[in-house]
Amino acid sequence: MSSDIITSSTTTWAPKHNPWLICFPIMLSAFMFVLDETIANVALPYMAGSFSISRQESTWVLTSYLIASGIIIPSVDFFSKLMGRKNFFILGVLVFTVASFLCGIATSLPMMVITRVLQGLGGGALLPIGQAIMLELFPVEKRAQSMALFGLVVVIAPIIGPVLGGWITTNWSWPFIYFINIPIGIFAIYFAHQLMEDPPYAQKQENVKIDSAGFFMLIGWLTCMQIVLDKGNDADWFGSSWVCWLTFFAVTFAGLFFMIQAKKKDSLIDLKVFKDANFSIGTLVQVVMQGVLLASLAILPQFLQSLMGYDAFLSGLAMMPRGIGALTTVIFIGTVGSKISNKLLVIIGMSILSFAGFLLCSLNLQISPMNIAIPNFIMGVGMAMSMIPIITLSTMTLSNEQMTNASGVQNLLKNVGGAIGTSIVTTLISRHAQMHQTALVKNLTPLNDNFVERLQAYQGSFQAGLDSVTANHMAQTMLYKQMLQQANMGAFRDTFEVCAIACLVIIPLILFIKGIKKEANNIAHQ
Image (cartoon, rainbow, N blue to C red):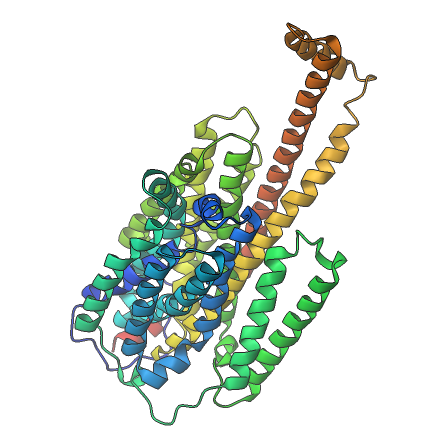
């Protein structure tokens, strides 16, 4: 085992079935949930056409899912105590599967938003419960392997989502991106019922009270925040009064939520886990990584479709090298990763992520597919190499009894980080495109010899069959469009640079994760 892994407490409980078999329904369920975070991205224009709405309105299909899943994630520990963790997990898969069918038959935007909310409420619990169970199932020396398997889903599923969604939408129709969840959900429910069991500390408890005030504050916080993040850029952010008010409410609700959680005995989440330095630092690193992951998944297909002329399927396909890189790294970590320090793996992984971001800064409008494939492959390697060990490191100093609560808190904050990261890069592209346009437009003047030369060349090519005035107008229009393309290209490069710098800035924090004494492992084995 890596020399930097530690455990603080263990229990005598052991599962009746082979732990690797129990992982099967967990992997299926987690795959469905994470896949649906991105699979609908490329299908939004088709949904907009089906519902007769704008592309901007269709983004509610994505945000409603994130809001609902974010609300249920920190409530996982409470509902697990209320009905037993296994029963709650199966209920979540059932609700998610039924909601997926309803999403597929939706005939209007309101119906789609309602069913996506239902889908998010059902699926929100699957990831934190799955992570907690897979950490509990294995002894300390095998947890790195279990997290490698878990990381396979967390890293690869959102990457293949746009590819699978584009292929299904192009060859069948968009409802099938939801219908494919139905057989997966049925299998997951059956095997979860047959294989999973609750340890003593995760069984149904009596007299469990709900933190109604905290739950209300959580709903208010996440709802207001998501609306601001999703629509703020279109409304000029704090130049709009409603954005200011919603931001005020979001901050107020968030402050009250954490205040209630800190003071109330029967709260939704137990904030005491943040007293563990490894958990706090590891969670912060994961929040930044989630922001970079979802942000890059959002803007790279946008770059390929808007500037390079790729269709939905090809833009999704261009993301595949990232999945290949992640898969290769997961196999590496699962086989020889236990011989390498987890802290070192995370530092190398974050450095590789940063390097891939800087490679994307060199993109231009004359690139070949390899200019996209290579940085994507490297980014997949860095994401898997850093994400899997950091999950292990952040939870190794926690007891099994703390796992469900800790996983819920961690996934809630990662969800928030992903939403904030996506919003930041969207704003950066919009604002930096305007900055680059202001810098470039001054070159479109008769005083610029290069402009005059290019204008005359285009005008000459258009002049066959057209009068000189029309040809001149068309030539100027073409040059202006090229200037806009260059401005947008510059904005994308700036945004990739910000992602790269974010990965570099977070690396020093990893050094503060406590190193582990070898004696701790010996105690854990006794």
